[in-house]
Length: 196
Image 1 (tube, rainbow, N blue to C red):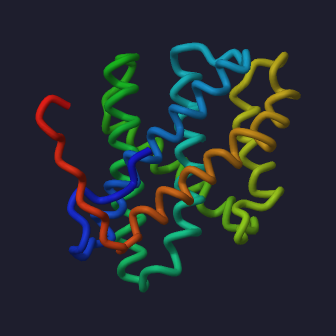
Image 2: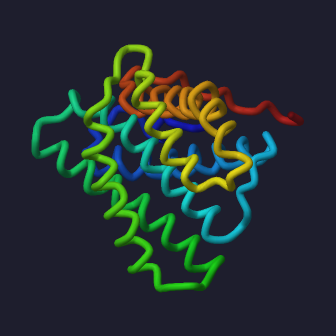
């Protein structure tokens, strides 16, 4: 995933970083869903599909929060998390409303924000170190996902989420945040020669 600024070298506000990261969070959630479906987990198009995306996005946001928290003061943290939560919620709401047509985007957004606020408190109990989320953090995510799965998949969901999906999502978010905060000047692209 692209996580470098098109025009490096200028300061980025917490809102700028959060908006870029919201796109990445949404892609991480989608990739996790695709991976689970490739592994033969039954996640049918419909409400379950979007409920999974909501849990995956909430997990990715928790990872992002742990990584970004030390980079900002209190005001910056509030601006960052508010923007990240709202932009991710808007993406989820727009897609769910368009594809399922079951309710208005505002109601879907409000429900995701409520889920995220609840998850903020729950995930805050778990550790996050240099290697990423600890086992309890991943186990909690696996528990949340397993509740969305059919009975035949519940047992295997834990293994898949703890061993593969959670760590891969956390690694992608970690790498993306490093790129968004990297202030190293990029080398200019080489112009294509005629005929290339």
